[in-house]
Image (cartoon, rainbow, N blue to C red; front, side, top):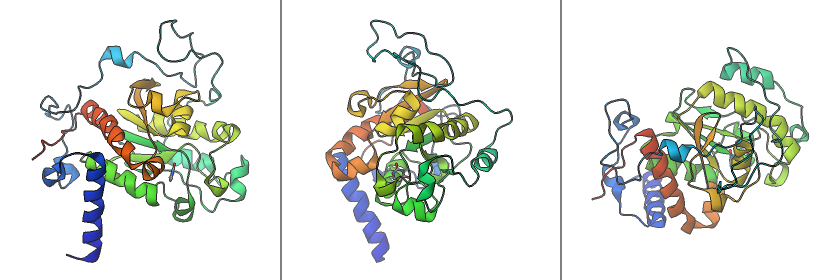
Length: 282
Ligand code: URA
């Protein structure tokens, strides 16, 4: 076995060992052609994953950044939205496209992040993806390459995607802010506010079946309020009619490998929702 193949295989074994699950990768699909989507004659009924979210589960609506939100019900388990979201300013653009959005961003100087960035990291993947992953913002590697999630955390995200039976090219990956914050600090609220309208336009154009927010910053940008990701991860919410779920950021998983099992539980819910088959374990 070539050293690169061995390293990749070892990384896989370590990943599944962290997930504390049996080595089901032995019979996972070798390409996205084997991935079965609901509506394409597939059924997730035999899947060991939890059932797709019901209408009742999807009833818990995240604040729409474009629309004033009604008061949350007193009994709702999520905190009431007390003020308008920071992110209400975005507008829908008629006949929008990813190309048009990239064009609108241009050589962006709208916030201070432009000063130290090397490249604008717009996003990458399938423009018609059924699943979109949203991260916080580019790191060093992403800033150099101009692509999201290509560093260490990105390698882990790739493993997570492949564990779902997908390839990176099947999904769309982007970030809340498109320029690297200095020293990889979290983006400031005004930076998020400036950049988020482009993210919302990307989501409107792609119109995926599900959005996964990686970490608290992405969750905040989509949910509209700062929340504890450990409390709300794995719960189906909704963003402008699109089912949305938060989970831990891969960078957090690198520091806390035990949390990989929690993320896998969340991703299995996403797989069930998308009608992706979870292979039976040997
Ligand atoms: N972390 C992120 O949130 N996004 C990236 O693109 C890379 C690392």
